[in-house]
Image (cartoon, rainbow, N blue to C red; front, side, top):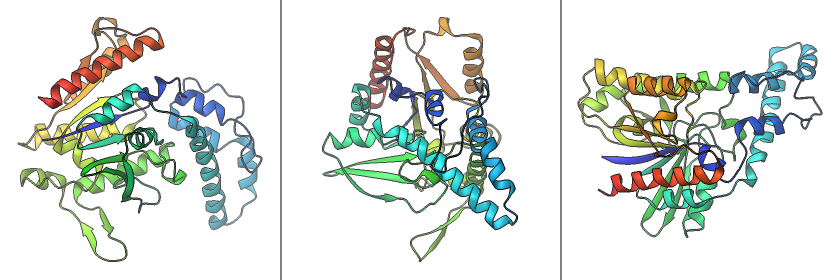
Length: 328
């Protein structure tokens, strides 16, 4: 069975790169149109998608759209505003840099890499290992069902799926609830066999529903979604925030297929937690239990990091666990 890595911003935090909270704080300034992004409201307990939506619909911006009378003009103003804010977020990512954990994970024989990150840090890591960028799939404008970047060194090919968007296309990055819900709708269409796309200007493709593909032994990969059902998935550096409704919904749907629809070919999904299980908070224990109910195996490090050096040791332990498993 194929093996893939799904990773999040935890890997970037090893370099003391920006957390999502800090990143949003940094864009709470004047945007390109001179509009105030932030209205001095404390957003600390607000889910990240709503924080973005709040910044998007600031008081200055609402005053501007109030004077737009037709729906076409209003849509254009909204789209321009979204692009400016998303571009400001993407600009913050350009300073992100690789680290030793990225380099070790890039060296492992994964069949694909899935990431919720918008940046290209893994690409930079691979470039330093003499991989060259080749043609991927950038055909989608706003969503990321098939979007991928590919790198090649000889016959060794690395494929990266930025499942929440790519900083090179700010419109694609998934932040607000509008985009998250749209993503869930796209994923649902894909699983039901209703998702269609074209190769260039030619042939239109439409694949059968996921349940039929699993029962018929179809193991072709057209999207990152396929890997969640057809490969072993190792999850590292991902907080699994409850606002990431696309991932939670997808795990729920997979578990329903496995339990209720009798899917015989079962992959495994392994989530690595950088904590000794005895040190989990009540909230963390709840999340671990939820993931277990959804068919995700949770594995823990032997240490609970308190300082940056401790996190590096914890991630090294995770890399060692993964290496031992996928090589065997």
